[in-house]
Image (cartoon, rainbow, N blue to C red):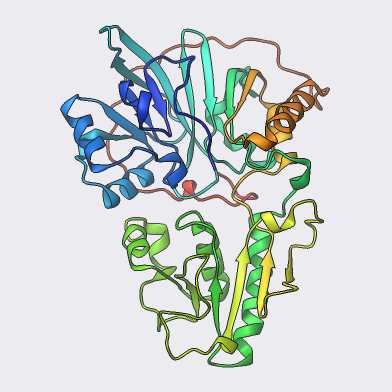
Length: 393
């Protein structure tokens, strides 16, 4: 759960993933993805004010589509930015000073449309990761976080990284890749469905959105659609890659992701299904705190017909450590900090950034130049927004 308050002090006049309180004084707004803890303050009134004061919110094309499905907003108030293509954003501060910043979106591998933002201005470079799941094998695909020298791709250094520290803890040292987790799920589901034609499966996901990669890959492996809530289906209809893998018809598939995480037992969308015919699968990383994640999944000791799978859309401790040792920064700001974990998080960040790097550190500086203005037009959705931890971003 993000604890970041929205203001990037190195870049005046912008707010990221927070749209209330002091952030309303900002002149440009940025949203990494559509999860509620990153959307505080977004409302029909907020978008009306953007139009009145000629301000804009910047995001990916998929995030824009989800916002337009949820809020009443004019197309012109939301500007989409393509992946790995730097654009110049121009805005004015309260004192009418004109600001030019270069903004690059980089795929975050978290959920549909999720991006990291790289902000650059006057030799200040700030990377805001939002929520992200990045594996070292992905690094060559993060073109916006590299520069070329003599045809060699080298990682940039940053003034500051605002980092997703959801699992910055030795209790979550490593996770299986999402593909490994989904393959395990598929074998359990297939076995359960083969036992009885009345058997069904409930996917008990932790959030309304965010499990889309799971739905798509599980659907492909089983050749079955996933039943989701009607309002979720309405959003997914705007995303081409999801259309063939989800449904709003509960009788067309035995796989359901239509329940709230905490609710009464049973399958409310199907009154013809008995509890003894329901297998619940819980994809979650929290149950693997301090445990061996090479055990990708296991049956629950307490809940009947419940299978737990280690599945995460956030980076593990080892992935965060590798990221910080590959992309150097003068300062790290943790964006997920619970009061009881604050000392541990800062201690671990110090430990990681002070470790000898596994590669020779890049000492050379790259020159920051503003590219030509690029018109931000609508584009079709692209599959590169969906990432496993093994595939290209």
